[in-house]
Amino acid sequence: MDSLNHLADGFAIALTWQNLLLALVGCFLGTMIGALPGLGPSNGVAILIPVVFSMGLGATPALILLTSVYYGAMYGGRISSILLNIPGDEPALMTTL
Image 1 (tube, rainbow, N blue to C red):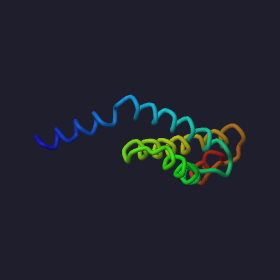
Image 2: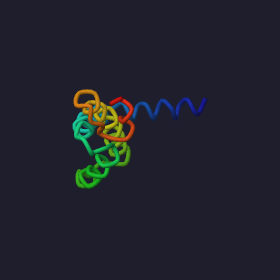
Image 3: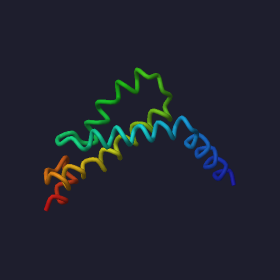
């Protein structure tokens, strides 16, 4: 029963409006970064680490922002491989065939 309380606390923290807004912004930025050929998810996260540090975010909002950038860039890498037939990153390579 104690683990359900911890799970509910985690959802209460993750589903605040600030964290949901950071996730939305991160997915949008990640999609824009991933759509550029040659920039992958790891590059997008590496570019945004100093930005997150300078914003003074806590650990939880920073992780939410960086993971949403990562998954948004994974999705955005498919855009250039489908429309332009140019793979943006390694996982999108098979989409071009």
